[in-house]
Image (cartoon, rainbow, N blue to C red):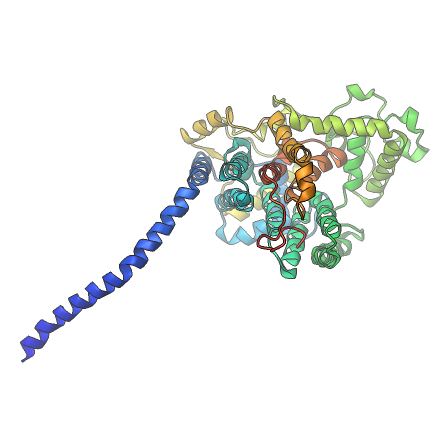
Length: 495
C-alpha cells in the first residue's frame, strides 16, 4: 500500500508542475513581451545611458577616489565644524555628512555619478511627449559630456545642485498641492547648496501666478522659505547678520571691478579705498578682487567677509551699477558670451581651468592655509590618505575622450534658441490651441542659471553645466506643440 502512495505522489507533483507551468506560461510570456517592448521602444536612450555609465565607471577606476577643487576643503571643514560658512551655504556639506559613515570619498563620487545618471533619466522621462529621438538627444549632453563627468568626479556642489533643480522641473509635470510643496523643498535645498538657486524660487512662483494658480504659488513659497528662514536663523545666531551667506556684497563688488571707473562714479571718501586706478582693460579677472592679497578689498583691516567690509563692497558695487548702467550691462553680456564660444580658452586663470580637466599627474597639496586645515579634516573623513591616484589606462582613455566629447558653446546657444524660434514659427497654430506650452519653465530656469553668475559674480565653466540639461529639455519639448488639453490627461506646470 505504501509503495503505491509514494508512486502516486510524483505523478501528482508532476501534474501540478505541468498545470502551473501551463498557467504561468502566458503570464511569463506576456511579461517578457512587455519588457522586450520597453527595451525596443527606448533602445537608443538605453544605449546612451549604458555608455554614460561606462564612462563614469572609467572615472572611478582612473581617478581614485576623487578629484579635488579649492572649495572642496571648505565643505569638509563644515562637516566637522557644523556652522554656516560666510561664502558658501552648507547644503553640500550636509550631503557629505550623510555619506560620512562610509568614510570614503569614492562613495561620494559614486553618489554624484549616480545623480548625473539620474538627471539624464529625468530629462528623458519629462521629454517623453516629444519624439523619442528628441528626448534621447536631450539627455545626451548630461550623460556623455566629458566635462559633466569630470564635474561629477570633483568634490564640489554643482552636481547635487543640478539634480535638485532638474528634479524640481520634472515635478512640474505632475499634479497636486503636495507636489507643489515638494518643488518648494527641492528649490530650498538647491538654494542652500548654491545661492544661485534663490532667483529660481521667484521664477517658479511667477509661473504659477501667470497660470492663475495663486494658491499653488503660496504653497511653493511657504515650502521653500521655511527651510531657508531656518538656515538664516542659524546664520544669524552664528554671525549676528541677516542672510544665508556673508559675501554677496564682496562678489558683486568684484563683478563691477571689470568696468567701475571712480572718475565717473565720484565715490565718497570711505568708498575710494576700493577703487582700482588701472584702466578696466588692464585689470585681472573679477575673482582676483576677492582672493588676491593686493586687492583693495583684501587689504582692508580684518577678514574679507566681515559685515563692515561686505557692506562697504555692496555700497561700492551698487554705486558703480547705478552710475554706469550701460557699462555694467556690457560687462554682463561679455561674461555671458563666454558660455557660447566654440573654443574653450583658459578662464579665469590657468589654475582654475586646470581643475576642469582630467589631470595627467596627481594634483599637489593645497596651498592656502584654510585649504590645509580642510585637508586635515578630509583625512579624518576618509580615515586615511586623500591624494588622488591616477590609474592607467583608464585615466588616459578619459583624457582622450575629454579632448573630443563636449558640448560646444554655439551648440548650446542654438539649443536655447530652438524653443522661442519654434514658438514663433507656429504662433498661428498656438493661437488656435488651448493651454500653454511646456517648454518655458525649463527654458527660463536655464536662462536664469546662465545669467545670474555673470551678473552677480563672474563666468566659470562649471556654472554653465547645470543649465545644459534644462536647455536641452526645453528644446525637446518645443519640437511639437504639445499643449495642454482639456481632458487633463497630461497636466503641466499650471496644475
